[in-house]
Image 1 (cartoon, rainbow, N blue to C red):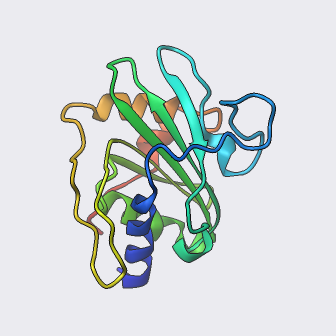
Image 2: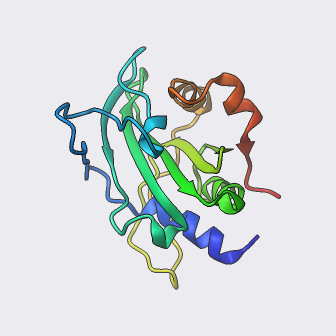
Amino acid sequence: MDRRVFVLGLLTLAGVPGCLDAGSGSRPNAVADSGPGSYLPESRENWEFLGMRDHPGGWSPLGADDGAIGQYRGPDGNAYEFVVMDTKSEYSEGTARSLACAGWQVALEVDGNAVAASTGTDQRQFTPEAPPQMTQSTVPDTDGQVRELLALSPRLDESDVEENQIGCER
């Protein structure tokens, strides 16, 4: 795997939890109408959409043209994140694989986008020279809920989640 793509995928985990940006719309928790944010589901079916945030350093250093991170409270009370990175299509599979290798529970490559969702994956500060170390692992036995959240996306369904899943291994 291209080391640069792997490191760029790891950098997506560097966001500071709680830094929410609802965007410029009048609804405080509204998702975007187009672009990467259009993948994010709004609150429904026991899932509470808490807000959307952008990557603090912009998406370009991560190998993406644009992106969005949605934060949710699941029916089990756990916190979940849903990330979409609009990458050049030749990099989307590698970026999705990097997300899977970085600890995201489910990662997909869909239409030139790297899409992933997971329960909490907070980590310590890091630089490219000092790779990230997880301070909180994913919540056990939540893969089904993660897949359910992805399938709630207005642009995905259950078959997209199953057919486009990318694992860490090549």
